[in-house]
Amino acid sequence: MLEIGTPAPDFTLPDQNGTPHSLSEYRGKRVILYFYPKDMTSGCTKQACAFGELYPQFREKGAVVLGVSKDTVASHKRFEEQYGLPFTLLSDPDRQVIRAYDVLKEKKNYGKVTLGVVRTTYLIDEEGVIVRALDKVKAAENPAEMLGFLS
Image 1 (tube, rainbow, N blue to C red):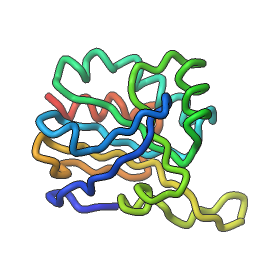
Image 2 (image 1 turned 30 degrees about the vertical axis):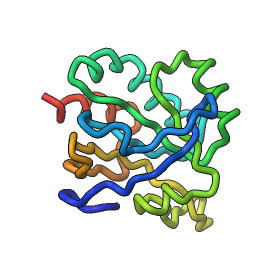
Image 3 (image 1 turned 60 degrees about the vertical axis):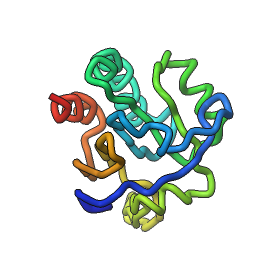
Image 4 (image 1 turned 30 degrees about the horizontal axis):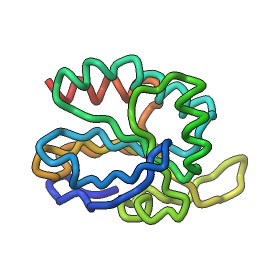
């Protein structure tokens, strides 16, 4: 996980429509950048839907929400459409941004060790600096927790 007070690494990734987005485009706004393991899974769906429900409040506070996983653009599009997600999902199949934000870790699942994305959320300020960094977050609670940091 990256340290609070450090500049957030810039990146460019395609969204669920194939449109490229760079972090630097969001200067002047606060950014909730959250990393999740996989579209359509239970925890990731709870987290995404909770961000979707609170999205108008994030907008009121001048923040944008960007979700990142290794899933494809097509997978993100299905995820967005199935759950009516109003925010941007970014596709990182090569895991370059996932690695840059230090969220690719060893995980144990039923005794088997694999390399996977640890659910992590960053709050990036208007200048592009990380001001909050939370790892191993609880999927359903994370969006409300992040909203609280914007007050």
